[in-house]
Amino acid sequence: MKWNKMGRGTLASILSLALVSVTACSRDYVLAYVYVTTSKPLTSTSPNGGVSAYAVDFQIGSLTPLADSPIPAGRQPITLVAAPNGLSLYVLNQDDATVGQYAIGTDGKIYLQNTVNVTGSKPTAIAIDQAGAFLYVTFTYQLGPQGQQLYSPGSPGPGGVTVFPINKDGSLGTPVSNTTVGTTAANPLNYFPVGNNPAGIVVSNIPPSGNVGRFVYVIDQETTTTPKATVLGFSQNATSGGLTPTPGTTITTDSTGRTVATGYGAGTTPSAIAVDPSSRWAYITDEATNQLYGYNLQNDGSLTAMVNSPFPTGIFPVGLTIDPRGKFLYVANFSSGTVGAYALDVNAGTPTGAIGSASTATGTGPMCVTIEPALGIYLYTPNNLEGDVSAMQLAPQNGTLKQVQNTPFPSSALPTCAVTVANGSHPTQIIVN
Image 1 (spheres, rainbow, N blue to C red):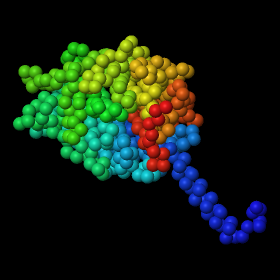
Image 2: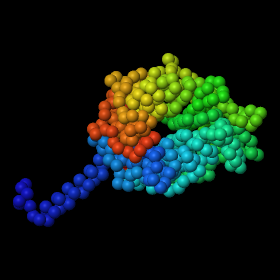
Image 3: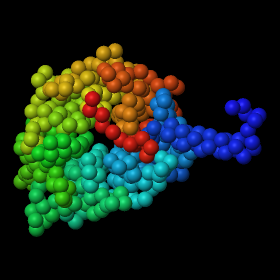
Image 4: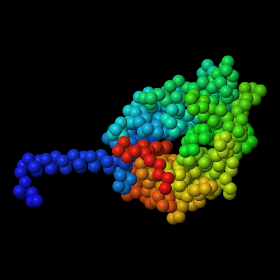
């Protein structure tokens, strides 16, 4: 059919249909959204940092800043986590010891809903469980039952974990009371004690078999115990979110009332922790010795070291993640300016350097690593000393990486961490093959 033989009504209908198709297709080309915390104040009159937000291109993984980016956050935002349903974002602000809860719009824009206080000071890490029911925040210095300051930078001491229940609208409830760990029912705490300098936290999934519970693991940069660095394991109460030490982890108090925490050895200065999607293995980076520790998760939540663990990394590893398929692990090496790639043995979990990409260049000072959950093929890392975000594409066959066109992408100054959320038209899927 020739265009000059169409009637005006027919032509208008076709053009209208084409416009609708292009609009829908354009919307579909946004695969996911990337959110990056930036710690430098956004303005000269406010001490607050922000969150840079980007749309991910479906075809090549490039980043386009959202119109209102960056979005204000609290003082010194250091990390963040997204709800499993992709509707809420939680930003951890270190200097004011708060968590900002943001709603994620259908266009990827985020809107601050509430800000809540952590039950200690100098928070360090944040995690959310698979059900999106509880949020876990580690902090450096404990407070007493009535909120009095027990420890501080001038008087260092053990930290703890604040457990927030998450309401149906994504808001955070009152911190969970602790009557089991380091306290009594008559004198409950609103946190769960851990050791000195907790640096990271992760919540395991419930395996498909369903016969194993969910566990929470905290890495501690200890200064007074032996070994100096430990992994602490806790069993999660599925109803309350509360924590109970697993075998191999003890939380006690000394004669002065100070918390003493012991667990599993984790090198010298553990910096990050991740658990694979099947909840069979845990991995920990040690920034002081440039190593990656591997552990097997037992049915009771206890840990046993992998054969040949630890494994070498780049210089000063500070972040890691595992792809949604559970086949590959990636480490951000701050001082090397690289992302290290590892293939995970399907039976033993042992990491080995992925062919051709054992070390792929980023910008200066990569801090953490995130992989979009829709296709699971685009990887992003914020470069703290360069003020931008590196983007890479991973090959699902062997985990190799290649840089995305036009990488790196500008961000606000001093980016600290990143998280990705699938666009609504591209649901999160964990591909097992």
